[in-house]
Image (cartoon, rainbow, N blue to C red; front, side, top):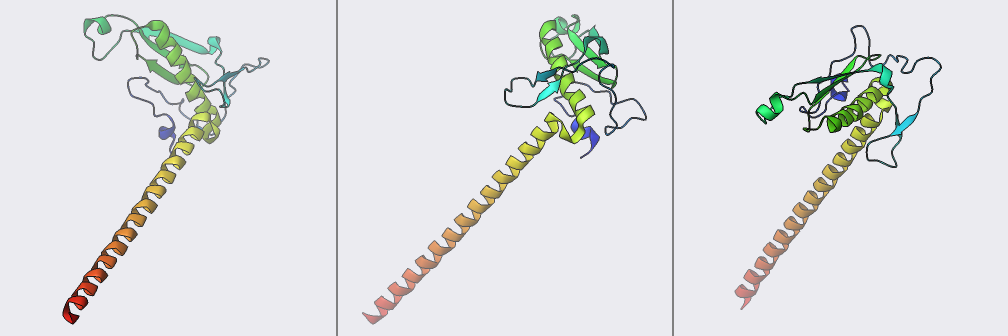
Length: 177
């Protein structure tokens, strides 16, 4: 799987600046300062999923910039677009999904948390596991659909062969009469 595939999110939600030059996704940087504890945080809206690491506020740089996109003057003149940067990893998230700064801040933090998880855990991250599970479900649905189609073709062939056999019997009975 390419590293760019790990950072794909809906376009209006985020813009990502990849890691500093010379770093790879497989290299693990120290997420927390020495002596600090990691507190796990639950994934957004999912109770039974594994937890994500919390982000320390002193490791984040937050900026509010003017909005963009449709909405005219109300969007283009207000500074409700949140740009959040995780300093240790260099990951940048830009969120302008709603008109509310508070909601955009929460969304940006949640998205950044998932991206940091992908950065540090790679293939074992929550996002990658969900992506693999979704792909597996898609393959299973595809397989079931193919089997159903094969069954339909087989039934159609059997019906047509029985129909032609009945015609042959009708022809034979008409000749004997």
